[in-house]
Image (cartoon, rainbow, N blue to C red):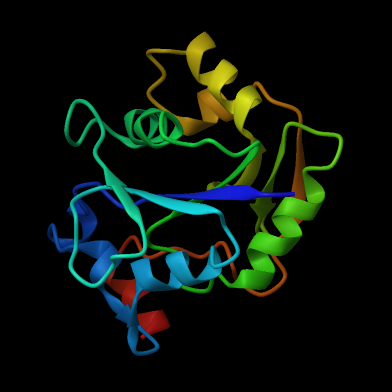
Length: 180
């Protein structure tokens, strides 16, 4: 089944003193490159955030209002998606791989979506695959939502165990030190 990739790569990174988090390097490459590479089989990859050099293989868009948060970013990216399934990833996932995307897509079968859940039971709302139409409908039902959880928790989704730390993101200096 064809799919689109959607990477949310905006945000203020306030816990990291405002650095451009998606461009932090882990394992010799920017976090954003890891997310885009993990979406390598996608028909299209859309990145929501400020345009960065070296990513000519993606479509860029911005949320409205700028820095409007992840729900606004999701809406902006979904507006461009044409595929039946969309894989939504954070631009700061340190261990996301093609295999992560593959297992999320496979788990959508018969459901609205699938997302990663870590060993502690934390749902990573920005590491999931969703039926585009159902995700759009959930967003429309919750137009003023301040959290992705408020939007996505309305859907029928599979929880996929994070077997290799794939849902780990970089939010703090300690996170960055751990993954560098």
